[in-house]
Image 1: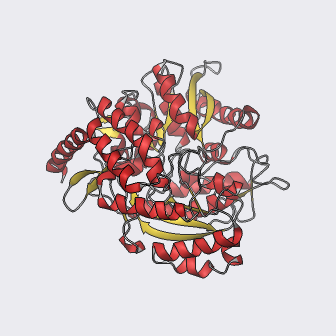
Image 2: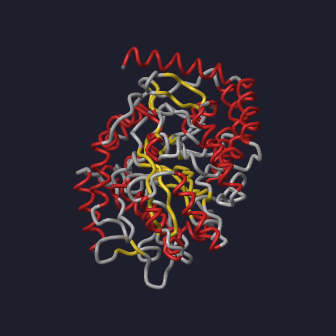
Image 3: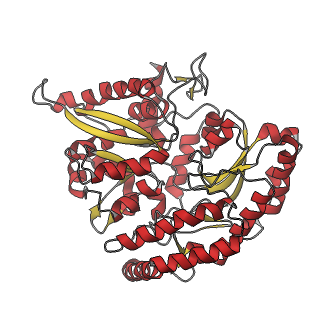
Length: 507
């Protein structure tokens, strides 16, 4: 079958890993399967009529190959960030969860709450293939010799970029201006031309926290795009910490002059009608908002293949205009991946499942594009596309190729460069590492301080990031005062002490 030949080729070229089917090592053909409960995040709600065929196909595969049965639940991003921590706290049955950029379900937030299991010894037994694949990436989710997560294997470096609907840019004669823009002022003028002519708001939020111009970990400093920069968050998943690489100084992100400058720009754009009015409060973001017509542009952190994925999800051809590029740091490995909660009853089976996921094109494609023939098919170029008669609006199950497992093994979506996986692998092989790669803060004893500071951030930063505060200077002053009262200086001192110690040993 053509699909299996293609995926076999992808597997052999990327990893050259062999898996032994469960039937080959089972003592008894009737031996009971190991049952795990898995919670996955998706970007848009999907009901069981959509997910059940995928879950059935997953289990048909993994029961035969690794002797595991997975009860899978999919949650949208907003629900995931609240529901999963509560389920762990309530000791509900969960064996495998994702860590995500959503603060409540981020690697640092799980760690701060003491909700993750050290899986270092289990990995030695059940995860040898993924350990070989991950290499030093596993350091980003480790504290000393203890391992608490498994990063998705994907393109982990990239850039900050605008995606803009090309049809509207063409209609209003600003395509070339967007493609050649070198400053925020030039981009602003081009976007305003479209908004004034079409009546459609320009930029939507890129996350569920109102972020519009400053997707973490990027800082939109200065008017020139070349002045914008990537910074290392050293594993801070709450978007509160910035480290100045020139001086190795840990700083409050919101207390910097650069953030204040961004807040001013956001307010100006908001007042001009260029930013989606509900950006600070909506739980929808980026592609879903562009698809719905709430806006026609996104400003976000991207990687190789993001453009094609967004075009497939929005249904529009998009212009990509890069602002600045990134490095590979600890926070890169803590963006999307898997972890085992402390309440897991089958941690070994959970790790066995992830080990298989990281080496199985068939499983990766199932979780990403759905059931072959129903949700997707291969075109003549060996790329995934919708079956005849199926569209982005009617497909039902369709996610993004960076969410679940090993991106390199997933059939690229139609419209991608034919060699996109080779490009992504080369990028991973040659990625510039941050000087702090492998350093991740230990939040033990800081849980209450982090929670207090994060509560303050939730109250203030969506208004500032979206430009909707009304008075950014007054709001920012109160914001930083409240952060200090919540213990931000204590947090900075603790992080600085840990970073200094790590640099003394590893620097």
